[in-house]
Length: 348
Ligand code: SAH
Image (cartoon, rainbow, N blue to C red):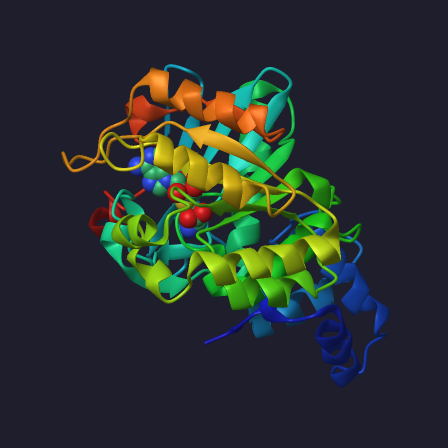
């Protein structure tokens, strides 16, 4: 089997040309075609002599992902099913709004965490995405965004399928390639990684040079309640999460965003609100109250707007910024927590 050329670093590419008794700068040129211009057909690499293009084709393949199907919501949201080289699929979503065009991407096929209210959790974890598969979502979304909305992607959120911090090595390389000048050159300030909260990895990524905004899916600031809806958090409790977030803040000086769903009869009491307010006071943060998107069982229901309004009021009174976020793309199962491989079997 031919080697996947995108698994090579720039230095590896230079070494390849040296081994072929060619000039190493050819490696820089190929790297630019791959990562800056997203050109994957060796014949389109026009500043590379034909004989070398043939050599590349003899030695390498480009394992690129393709759009399997896509669907548009009544509100404009575009959901795509991405088919990976091995036939697995993940989803990515473009959410157009005013002057923004937010891209929501996946980091794993399935997910290893078992948040009770999330459709992706029902798939279990199949595998991590490679960094070039994360990158492919951005490349394909850029094209689609121009076609449908006549403007580029403005923001990227890792809020699709999977837990990004359980795949942080590929995550960091992908973000590096998305942000670096030799790649897509997007500002790191426009990238948000959403995590369920893996304290030791939060600390680890805080120490890295790759930058991004961090969002944490909190959903309860009371340990016993959080464990019930997010069982993995027995291992990663709220206290150690807080310590890791304080470390993150000390290193990055960027506020954390907490994502929070208010579920009926689960976290809709004043005691829940008070617990959240006191948790938030310990770390520079803002809160996004997100709407619950049904995933086809009756276990969870969205709480009333009186209680979500009360959350916002109490947080604001404590000088913590809080907003209620309406869902997008619900009619096509493209909203937060609804992404699942419904067509997994048909895709391969
Ligand atoms: N694993 C990461 C990223 C994927 S989930 C994380 O947990 O943050 C992206 C966001 O959707 C998270 O905030 C998650 O809690 C939320 N979510 C999951 N299921 C949902 C549902 N049914 N309705 C609304 N939001 C949901």
